[in-house]
Image 1: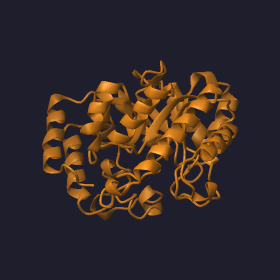
Image 2: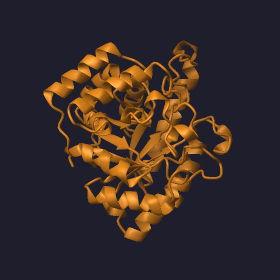
Image 3: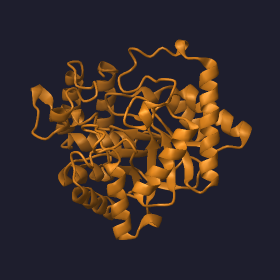
Image 4: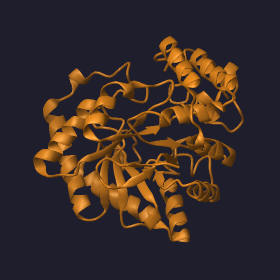
Length: 347
């Protein structure tokens, strides 16, 4: 397992991060603890969660359970000092989370205390804004994304208030570093500018989707990462399981995410299938597990701080963690380039 710097924070994170969004819906508390034990035995020191979790499905009845499971594990193991722990404050849109309100000072102050209580800790290493108030193109929103309709004054006031509030909870010792999620190059640069001008916490990372089917980060955000020392925390490296090949030809394995989420968050549509088949065939041609190839590819990217994996079974977890030991040959990388040119944006 390799370790990378988290921005300019001095925090070192494993190149594989353990994602947790199925814990409390598809996975029990004991299964969550088993996954954590295995991941940490393999050198993973980084856990990513969110107050919103679990998903698959989202539910007011299970809201916060994922953080509770992590908290009970850390308390039982007495290992908080060995964990790099990240969580997120939810944005607008969920009526059962602060009435569906956008991120605000009051919302952050309430959310951080509730997360810390569920996690049974005094601090988070990384606190992330789950999605921006102003809107974004992630979660398949590219077709409706229209930044020209954003209210400039409101956006400016939101960003200033949010960053100032993060500064307060950092000073209070509740958070060590700030991360963004589902954000843009402009949003990140504006937060960096505000931080520099006002002596406030600097963005350390961006958690955006990245995988063989969705590579928007390769463009402006990759340049930002290079010049500003902000690493990507890549979520959905398997494109919600598509890149394993298990959904090819209309298959719907029992208990899989597709049986609980009808379209995998908009990813499951006809245009993805030829691309998935090409990547799966490439992996098989070289005797590689398709899931491991997909994760290993993400690990080759120069802007990558950590790749967030998620699993509902121990077999899946072992496969995904094992990608850290896989080096992709020049032939495989050339095959990926060829397929990407054929299917540059199938999602």
